[in-house]
Amino acid sequence: MQGQKIKSFTDLKAWQKGHELVLGVYRETKCFPHDEQFGLTSQVRRACVSITSNIAEGFSRKSVKEKGQFYAMALGSLTETQNQLLISRDLGYISKDKFARLAAVTVEVSKLINGLIKGVKKLNT
Image (cartoon, rainbow, N blue to C red; front, side, top):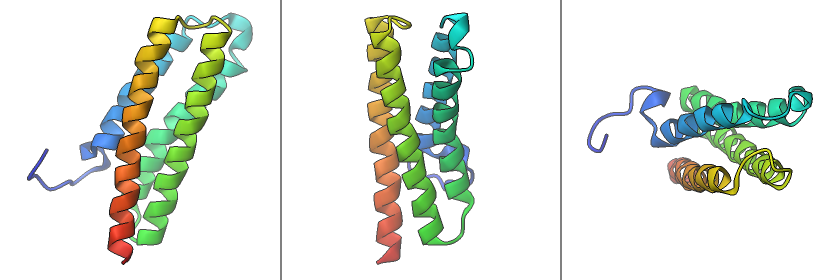
């Protein structure tokens, strides 16, 4: 995408990697115990979807302050997702290998969201 104008939130690398994370979380949580359907399964899915939703909403906001707030909320949802993935691993709901793969994506998404936040801060100065 380098050199091309970003026209949609789907053009943002942070959203693209976040979407990859959402799909991975949904795939892995399909195998969670049925009694977790309204517990951890629902929580981690909602938190993960919230990452990309907040990136999308932040992208559409006109004020720099609002953009920053939504990107910060995306980062908070990412941290929540990381915590819930740790719990899932420790309960044995996902393997260490699958956890490691998802955790690596969360680190990448974190860096990308932090890049969005820094970019917004530059606009504000």
